[in-house]
Length: 307
Image (cartoon, rainbow, N blue to C red; front, top):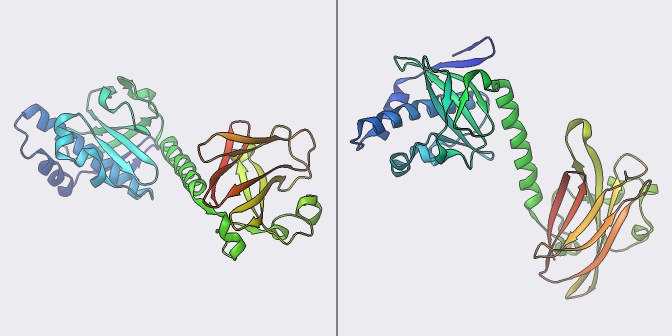
């Protein structure tokens, strides 16, 4: 394996690569279709090996390009990257200066990778990628492999955050002493002077969690705080606040939104200039689900709760 001028990545197509390709072609009587399947398989094999070398987990066996029926019905060369999505690996033969992308793979892909095969089919050269589908893309318009890996890393981060946010928080169990991971005691999360009056001298259970909106330079760190009080066996009172995590005040325009179990917004608080915190208070019945969203500009963090 070797890199060439940091523009491409070459690797040999081993006996294993050709064995897989031959197995996928078995039973295909149309020679043109069989050749298409064979070359597509080699392209996916190359990208699969490249990504595993770069530290990404893949699942080729769960991709349409390993499904006997799918490859006969479609021109497909997909590769599932675990916890991220499906890539399309498109063949480019020597002497051809563009990569063709068939219409049947224009959706449900996180990117399209161009793979050049030599005439002997002994070596594959991964040239670059594009994020969006087009009927054809000139090779000199491809984005670099460095951009490709950065693209996958960003998607992996976003997917991980979405997965974490989608976990249902069993808020009713807090009163029984069982707390979801990541929710800290309020005095461990915020300084005493940051706490609102609603949280002082309370015997109710209060927990908080740091949330980050945006990425890198534009990242805004906030604290989401939730207090749970048991009014009776069937109902909880819930008070939630958003605090600045490090600064003394919130920027203008931070939104704290409470959605009901049907996704409808029922409460919304918006920070004004130099607000120390914003809050919403409501009650929820046993078994009821709701969502708390913290929004700033185009960035959002949401948490799902169940009483």
